Image 1 (cartoon, rainbow over the protein chains, first blue to last red):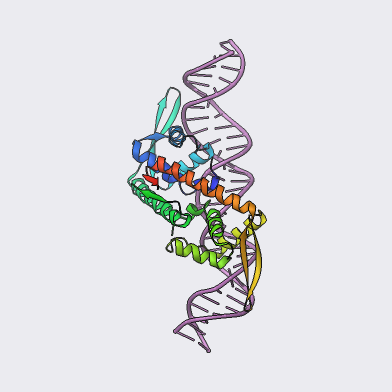
Image 2 (cartoon, rainbow over the protein chains, first blue to last red):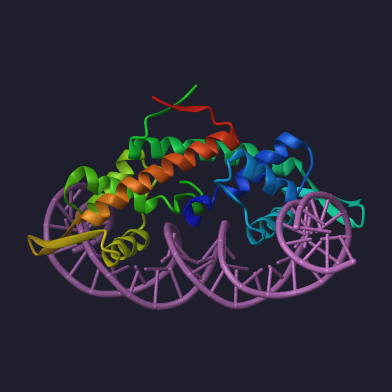
Amino acid sequence: MYSKELLKGTLQAIILKLLAEHETMYGYEISQKVKELSAEKIVLKDGSLYPALQKMLQDGLVDFKEEAVGKRVRKYYRLTATGSTRQKDSLQEIRDFIGTLNDILSLKLVAV
Amino acid sequence: MYSKELLKGTLQAIILKLLAEHETMYGYEISQKVKELSAEKIVLKDGSLYPALQKMLQDGLVDFKEEAVGKRVRKYYRLTATGSTRQKDSLQEIRDFIGTLNDILSLKLVAV
DNA sequence: TATCTATACATCATATATCTATGTATAAAT
DNA sequence: ATTTATACATAGATATATGATGTATAGATA
């Protein structure tokens, strides 16, 4: 696990990216996908994920529909048009920021 | 300027890296160097820099000696042995984290 | 069948780091 | 003479991830 602070500013971008690739996803599915893609290096806590989704909902970046699975109910989230725009913007911002870190920290990263 | 949150978790690593490369630096010099290396994309506020330096001092990552320049006094900071170790660790953590972001966000970055 | 683990959601208090605003003061530039 | 740059600092505001805790269903295992 990384220092908690590193994830700040990138968690929302990560969620947006997954939703951009998957049409709909429910919260637990998102957390599992992040764990998988990060080789368990990023393990979202419930207390991080659900409040983040609710903030994105408030900000109009996502909406959701509930779906019953047995007696349980999942909330399937989907990007709105606003969310789709924000997704591209936030991804670009992270690219740019990493480029800046690359310069300052001499990381020697290049895009292919 | 980037979303404020992005810098969190990396500011200390940036300061440590500059100190690893420069033997001694004073606060204002650090802020100017960061501005320069980032093409003004990262402009540290006094309220970020000085508290950060004081925390690093408390944590034993740096020490300093005061030096008079005319009637003004500069605080020249220097890495301690602990700080030097931390510098390498935090840089590696950021590399690793960016690698993970690379996977999740499909950034297509490679090290050269 | 009982128990543990995984699935699925949520809220509240806490921690932490950066920023904004503000303050003091010297030095250089216009 | 006035503005800008240099050089430090602190207090309060803000944002966001975490820890702790809660509820409840479903599946696995002993």
